[in-house]
Amino acid sequence: MDFVSGIIGIQSLLNSQLVQYSIEHLYSGRHHLDDWRPIKGKYLEVFDLNAGSDYRPNVLVKTGEDTSTGLQDLHDLPPQEKDTVRVYILHDVEHDKDFEAHVQKITSTPLSGFLHHHPHSTIPSLSRRLEGNEMPWWQDGICVFGTGNESQGLFQTLVRCHIRLRCIWRENRMLCFIFCEAEAASYIKESRSNSESAGSLVKRELARLSANIRSLEVSLPANLKVGVTRLKQQRIMILRVCHAVLIGHSYFLSATETLFRISMRNLNDPDQTIVASALLQVLSQDSYFWEQVQQNVALFLDAVGFFQKSLQLMDDLHSVTQFQEFFLELQALCTALENQTSSLSSRLNSRIQFFEIGRSLHESGRGQLLTLLAVIFLPLSLASSILSMQTRFTDLHYLIYDFFGVIFLLGTLTFILLGVLLLLRWGYGEFRGWLEDSKKSNFLPTKLTWLWTKRTPIFTVLLLCIPWSLIVASFLVGMLNDIGIGLKVLGYGITGFITLFGVLVVLMRVKRG
Image (cartoon, rainbow, N blue to C red; front, side, top):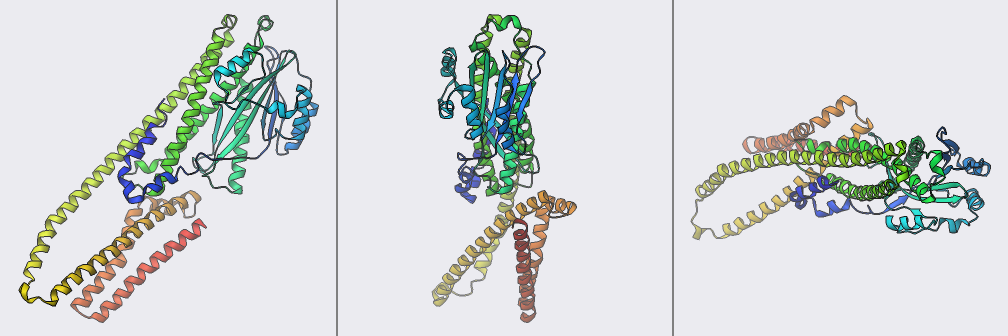
């Protein structure tokens, strides 16, 4: 399952660009990626499962905008029927007084003891605790991801929910608690709008998880319920949750594949042959994030396979057609997840290859042009230098001093021009980023935005050539005709440069402010 090999390959492809943009830009994208900040926002949903072949899941409590009302409803829950599973899906309510009183009532255990769990539980250790009829926790590898829509971007609204699963028994009834801890990556700018968007996204993903659990019809026939042990019931319930999480992963990968394709369009642009530092940072963030997703998905698929094989060893379940279909569906979901990750990697590799071909052709053309210019102008320069000598070397005297002085002056001018070119290059990248932001936020009219975005290089060259032409014309007029007129034209050219630069800076500040 080579989930991220294509994205990581970009980093080796861009090694030649790191000299220009500094290695710090590459790793600044990973800064604090291991740090995820918690998302606040209470969520509670309670429903019953598996009360018979003709039973439909009954949602008993579900929080809306007013979370306190849902928590108070815990005191008025109806009695749980025999041979049922009562499922609790919770987020940020573990330390609520109403929930604490409810847990102590149904389990006769203080909340602190109920919440105690093994932080590093593995699949084999969980199996041993299941066989020992303990009250186990399972949390390794269970992680639900959610992302926003196209307008928000792939990583502008991204959350993950760690799930801790616990099943306990009370007489002939099972209680299943699904505790969720939602987080947002710390590199996403923290603001009120982002927090509200992340909170609503968490509620949406948990509601989808609940719907997926309730939509699966898997119940034991009456003739098997008597002989089924708690171990089998717990494993069936765990597989049921796994099934819902697998559906969530499949939905997440499908959505992010679309958003990722949109975010990587710049790699397919033949005109974008120079990778900006901002793109390096984004690529680093993406690759590091997909590494984390790969680890979670791989571990979770292993866990699903373990529980599935353990249930397939039970002879009494082979006669139940419903479970045979359930196992086949689990296998199909796991295969689909692997295919999705493989297709994402292969598509990205193809984009990288086309990007590399375009960049190689562009660099080859530039190299040929530089070689041609060197072949033409180097001999001319040497010949003109030799022909311009009208004094013997022994008679130069102070001219030698002037000669080296001109060398130092020209060297200084070269460094100044180099700095100006680097500044213009940085400004060009900022200008393109400003145009992209304007396109997303409709800051400019749609037609004008498309025109500027598609033909930014042409317009940039034209805007720079007009003032530059005035400056060159001023020197020509000053040297060949009248120096006064030349100085006036020079002033117009410099004023044009300053005005153009000032207008662009003001527009970008207004947009980003």
